[in-house]
Length: 133
Picture (cartoon, one colour):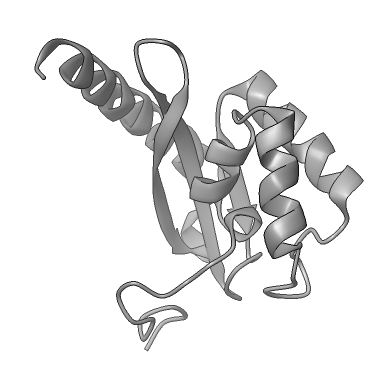
């Protein structure tokens, strides 16, 4: 069984543990991010999890600049992920979409390919949500 195969559906994770959560956190207002962090803290998921607020803020700035988030064994050992934020028509982040899998597959060429797929899916979702209500 691979890492993560036995995670029950609906299992709770913290936003700063995953690329999906970080893609959302990066695009929330600083006040909303502070609320979330103050309420839930920055607990450790693995030894690679960012638990320092300043380091997390630096990573969230990078995510805003590059347009996508990654996680590298921050939630589960042996698992990496990449995600992009999804925005509404007012450019508020409403969700994210991503791909997670075995660390061995998430080399830079694979991530680049997956980012193209995610960007396409993101664009489709954003257009559909704005024009087909």
